[in-house]
Image (cartoon, rainbow, N blue to C red; front, side):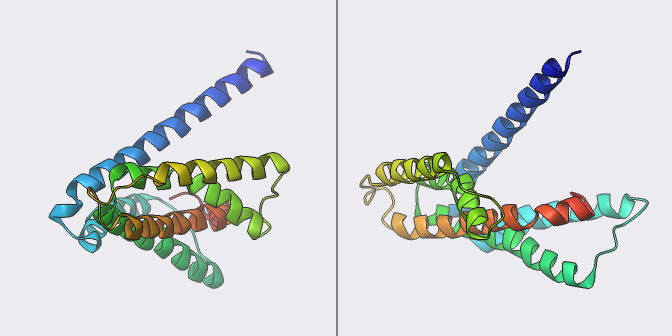
Length: 188
């Protein structure tokens, strides 16, 4: 196999997993919107992420060697984890109680833009002119798409949009600040 075909294969697998991940995120928005009327955001968050935490804890305990966390890192990891695995799903579920799945999904799709902008703001990533144009175009497109009148369908859509934006800020914070810890301590 040549280096080119190896790189192409790696790139195609990366695209596949990115698309798969995006599809899961999109279906999460739809399913959350479908069931949020039958529960409350806090209960839904506790069930979804609490169950996942128990499963992951089982994997962690089964490992032969657990990571040893530096005290300072443990504080930061606790904050980052709380923002991503408690605040993000709570804000998302709260948002979807007030807005439509389409609007929530559209705002969910702004996470890469928010992540890139936040990374640039904190000096983790450099914004290029092309990235700035892409961000402005995406913001303009999202604004136009959200400009529709949904008062009859979702009277509190704007409040839901604000909560979804808060959720995307939480998820983007995790994306921006977790990288070095994931490298240092591993994904699990």
